[in-house]
Amino acid sequence: MEFDCRTPATIADTLTRTVCRQKTRESILRLTVLGFFAGVYIGFGAQLATMVTHDLAGVIGVGVAKLISGAVFSVGLMLVVIAGAELFTGNNLILLSVLDRQVRIQKLLRNWGIVYFANLVGSLLLVLLMYESGLWKTNGALVGAKALLIANAKVNLTFLEAFTRGILCNWLVCLALWIAVSARAVVGKVFAILFPIMAFVASGFEHSVANMFFIPMGLVLKGQATVVSTAGLTGALSNLTIGKMIIRNLVPVTIGNIIGGAFFVATLYWIVYIRKGKSGE
Image (tube, rainbow, N blue to C red; front, side):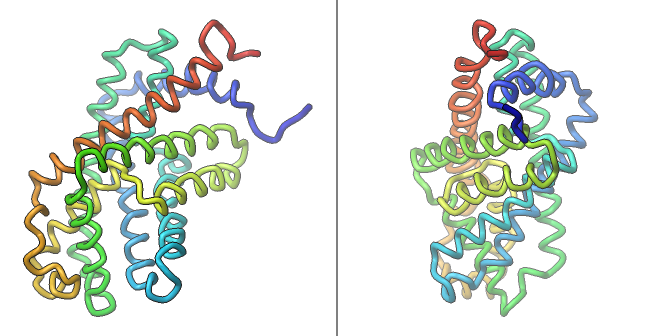
């Protein structure tokens, strides 16, 4: 029987023995530039979601507004996959090649470290550009207020909340990448990415690289009295600091993302399709 997409076993084999192996062989320069791109691209999705939905919940309801937010946010991963970039959360799938003994653990950690830092740099540049653009003043600074509310909510999660949401998020993100590999045409990759990413955003899960944009955007806006007042957060921003961003969000979310992608997707699919040469069956 002919399929218009690759089978799960073929996806596993392609990722393990080709795609993920190649990622660990890239030069520091290529990983840095492509990682920088991914930070910007995911940030584009984050800022678009903020802009589009800043006043939407009051019109169509919270649930549908979240669904639309997820749909527009997915443009970020579409840019990563189709235009080409290196995203830390997606690269958690490299564990497939480590488990198959195609790649040493040191190479995986090298990739993760360089790409994570480059994602952060790209995200922070976009924060600077968005702040200087003044677009946060849109609609009486309601866009800026929405960005501030998002950032403040993220730094007020408990460690366990941030950790578990991180697991759930990257489980879906890596599944989006997994099924995108199955697609043979660009339109197939777009739809493969759209629905899992829409699901993670609408559900309220936590993505470390997206948060590299969301939280710093709040940090630069918390000095704007109009934005703080419009958001109703006067006197309620004590946790919105660089230190709390790292400790209360990025650390637990990053650990959760690794478990969600490297264990629940990479490890379990490796067991099913690659271990003992089952990929060709």
